[in-house]
Image 1 (cartoon, one colour):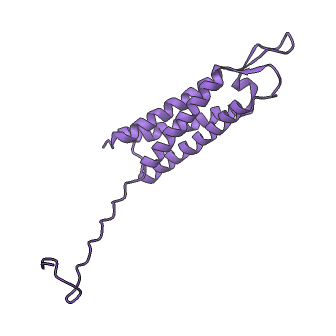
Image 2 (tube, helix red, strand yellow; image 1 turned 90 degrees about the vertical axis):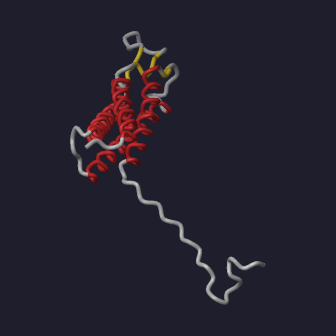
Image 3 (cartoon, one colour; image 1 turned 180 degrees about the vertical axis):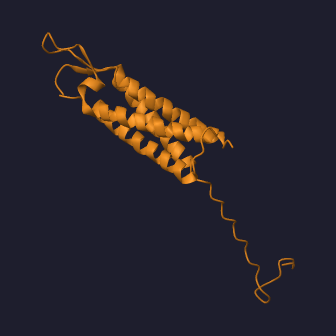
Length: 170
């Protein structure tokens, strides 16, 4: 039995953004202007730093767990409520790791030497990591059942002798 579609959008955003981070890790992240003749002109995140490799692993975990939640929402697989929340929590934790790794490498390039410039790959990875974090957070918050709102208490009418009756003229 398919559930509400309100959870499907963040799941799709999370899966898509996680896959974009994985692909962006193999794009050029840095360009070197100074170095030996044999040095490559551009460096990908995968070749440059272990943080990008960790981001790829966490992005894959986030994509798989968000995909499981999305398939549960569509009714393709049946996950028990707590399992769905755990999968959404795993996606959120992995998205936090991805965002931390990519944003760290955006702020602190490896071997901060003169002549290293940031390229499109690290910018795309940072944007996708933040979008992934938003989607995973929205997905996680929507997996919890809604609690009924408390009914406001009615005011007690004053007892006899506590003052004039509400219908009495003043």
